[in-house]
Image (cartoon, rainbow, N blue to C red; front, side):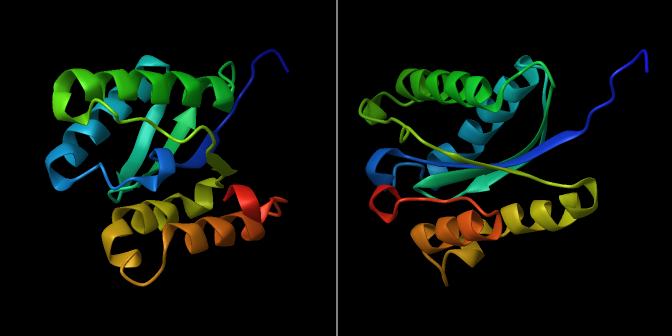
Length: 148
């Protein structure tokens, strides 16, 4: 086959350092716009971004020549710097080192978009920790409970 065809869809979850509730309503929409722009700048397409005060969910289509780890490294570094510049009162803002990235089939894009859109409602019933462990289990990812 002379051409390559891909549809690399990822549901990515990452949190603020020590899960500090720093992403308030004042910051959220601008931060999400910035994250979407960063994904576009890396050649990807943002299909959904939302979260709560201590974490972010992103549904994105990424290029096959960009490793997820590289995208997340660049995205988190740039977003931290941007937060410091735009919101000087958040000089201590940073992201936790790790993240979760789970592949999504095209047939589930709508379901994941809906899930991401309902984050505030969802987290009135379930903690970030419980949610993340559920993702890990559902995706067959082994983990050490000490690092969740």
